[in-house]
Every structure is written in structure tokens, then in C-alpha cells.
Length: 308
Image 1 (cartoon, rainbow, N blue to C red):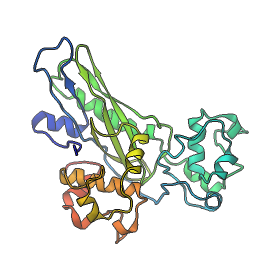
Image 2 (image 1 turned 90 degrees about the vertical axis):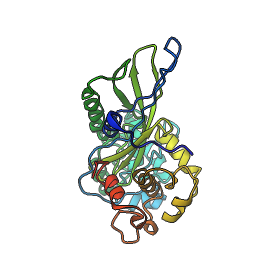
Image 3 (image 1 turned 135 degrees about the vertical axis):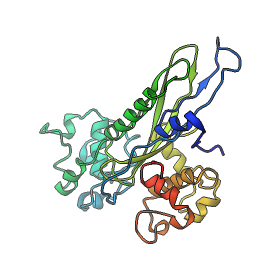
Image 4 (image 1 turned 135 degrees about the horizontal axis):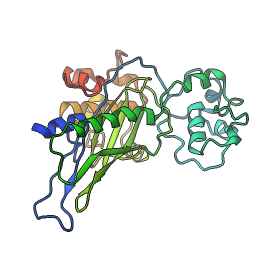
């Protein structure tokens, strides 16, 4: 299986670390042999506190009584039909985070916010779920500093590749969603080039490392470009794998076949998707599978991808 690339030498390595992903390919009207491929891993620095959040819709009873803010829903409402009310979401077993995301996805309709105060479903969910939810950052807010970093990286290149007039633009279909520790999402990096050049879009996978929105990312032309696609890949994967299983797996989330940093990124990605199971983190320090990876790879991920 083709894994997401990590490092290349020289200026390409610098571009790669800072988040500039370019895939310049030959197309009609270009000179023969003009094809070159540059792909990347990128990040922002991770800081701040963390807290446990739920990665799946809860039961109807839990949706009403739990006091744990659900800062992560893994895009649970993406495929729900339109026109639902707050009571419908409660009846379907969704917690407040999913209800608020659905309201934003629907365009913030008044049917879910009768008093028009910008906080939906207040009469259906308890206040101790509602208040904490709004402290979580949106995906849009999390992605903004990554985009700034991409733009700064491009501006620092003395001689940009021919035909490229800016860093790729990050676009996320679920930008309204609020995220916290343990969440994952995927976006697309749209190239900015002039004809006759063409660039392939780049998928960017984000791991949210803290409730204040610190992230680490991994990207490539074969990475999923939407959360929907990422969840499809997870649905097709084996569930309940251990740390050792991931090292042996031929699964999409395999941790066997790339650099230690990318292998560990995939391990944390799978751990998040599984709901941070204790079996992968027996000492409970929120650093899964520590005994199987070099400390430098572990530090790389949890520092947001910064070089150690």
C-alpha cells in the first residue's frame, strides 16, 4: 500500500515540513519530462490542556443525562436528512455536540433555536452539556493557523515552482464542526497554479491533540480529503486492533511501512477513531503504544510535528 510521504532532501524537505504540498504534473501543452511530484507532512504546534470526549453518538438516556461535553462526533451528522428537530436528534440517540453541528449544517434554522439567541436545542439538552460545548473551537478556527503557516512557507521560497502562484488553499466540508481532544477530520488542499500546469489536490488528515485545537497533520495525494472519506476507510478497517496488530496489519491505518513518525501518526489516528481505548494506553497517560516506537517519533506527533 502506498503510504503518505514524509521527508525529502534539501529545499523540498523545508517545504514539506512547513506544509507546502505541490504536485506539478505535465499536461497538454507542457514540455516532455516536465513532471515532478512534491508531497508533504505539515503541522501546527500542540499546546494546552486535554480532556476526554466521546467519539460516537450516545444512547437516548446518555444524551439527556451525561455531563461530559461531547467535543468530538467524527462527523456523525454528515449524512442525516434535512428538516429534523432537536427532539428528533435526542430520539435518535445523539448528544448535544451532534445536535449543534446539525443545526449549523442546516444553516442555523429557527426551528431549532426558537428564541434566536444563537444556541440551539436549549430546551432539550441539559445546561451542563450546552455550556461546555461552545468553548470548543470550530474546524475552521483550527485550520486557520495551518493555512497561515502554508502561506508563510510559500512566501519564504526564493524561487517558487513555475506556474505556482500560492500555497494550496485548505477546504473542509465540515468546517462548522467543533472539535476537541481525540477528534479527527480531513480536508482537501486545493492547488493554486496557472495553465498549462496542473496540480493534484492533496488530502490532509488532522489529529486534534487538545481541547484548545492544537493539531498535528499528515498529508498526501492519496490521503482522504474529507472526513466522510476518512470514516469510510475506518468502517472498512478491522476493529479492536492492538498496538502490535497495527504493526502487522495491511489495513489502511497500518503502522508498519513508513517512517517512525508517520507510523506513530497512524497509530494515534486509529486510537482516536477507536475512542482512545485503554488497551492501547495501559498507563493512561494519553500516549498510546509507547513501548513500540522511538521517543523521537512520539514527541514528533504530540508536539504537533515539530522537529526534536
